[in-house]
Amino acid sequence: MAGLGVAQIVSWGTLYYAFPVIAVAMGADLRLSKPEIYGAATFGLAVGSLAAYPVGAAIDRGHGRTVLTAGSAFAALLLVAWSRVTRLADFYAIFAGIGVTQAMTLYEPAFAVVAQRTMGDARAAITALTLWGGFASTVFVPLTQGLLDGVGWRKALVVLASLNLAICVPVHLAVVGAAAAAAPAPSAPVGAREPSGRAAVRAALRDPVFGGLAIAFTLYSGAFAALTYHLYPLLLERGFAEATVVGAIALVGPAQVAGRVVVWWTARGRSVRGIGMATVVALPASLLVLIALPSSFASVAVFALVYGAANGVMTIVRGLAVPEMVTNEAYGALNGILAVPGAIARAVAPVAAAALWSMAASYDPVLQAALAMAVVSAASFWAAALHRGRPRRPAPGLDLR
Image 1: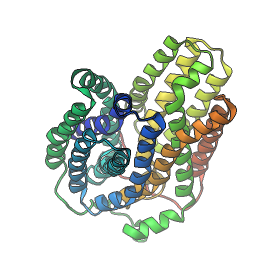
Image 2: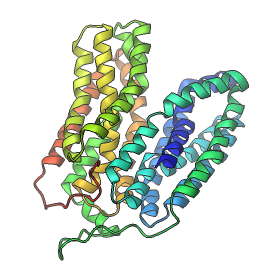
Image 3: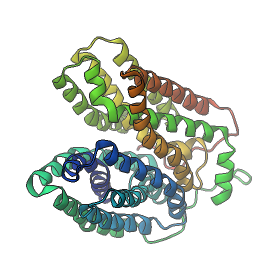
Image 4: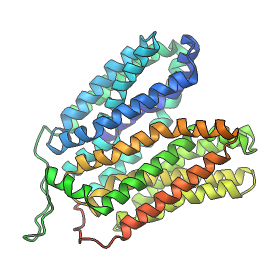
């Protein structure tokens, strides 16, 4: 698990957290506007969402090592290509590929591999993986900035590419087992077995619980992405001092890790649906704190801590909700299906928030829209969790012990 955790730090750091740092230097060098540069990231997320289902299905068929290793190798090549870019069209083409590599290397495929190969302790393994991944920004934001200051953005990208080749590729080859059939679920009484493969996917798509989860996770992803991309100017507009804003934003990352640690230590034996029901309420609660309380560091710190912790725990809930609440079968494919609308929401939400701001010259409509999305997300998850449909067997390996 430590090997996969290190690979997640490198993958998240090089393919996600390095982007905004490099974007500033690259934009100044090539005279590109922020919309032009960030449009590439949006385009990449949208293209990557199309790869989520086939990637998950491939892992279900036992090709996890191939998917993760090829994704890291492909990522290295694309980062080198990015280091040589001179035209905007080439930049967009490269980011289409980077979106695919994100679908092949970040949490969803790693969770699918863990769920398939760690059947005896799935929740503990997935939670541990998110704890490792939570340090990616802590490591790679200052590392990328140091590389920019020392060698410039083009050579910095070459260094980031080399980390994928030197760390992620050999780790995935060594840690993830060779292609093998997915581990079978524990025996169940005759007539109580879950459907497998495509039959499981078809059954899940007809299940109102799966539909409720899809709505909940999609709206949550959209609200969180819109707020995260606009948090700095939003807080300044609401009257917070610049130092207060910087301090509050700095709390979000540690709060995510802290939330996962709390789940690790205190939620042993508790159901994922119960953890999720508490977590989805935290995002609208944090927004109400931001809207209702005065512009002081105490209020914005409470917002940042609840906001960050909720997102940290939600990552775990997204990884474990399907096997507990829907089915144990076709984990990769079903999580891939759930990832598609979520990735599209993350791609569209920041642009939509910018459009809302432009219409009103204020972030008030953005906050109101984010609050509405968070409330509907919470209601959808609660409806799915409380649904009294067909009985479901508890997913194997969902004990933190």
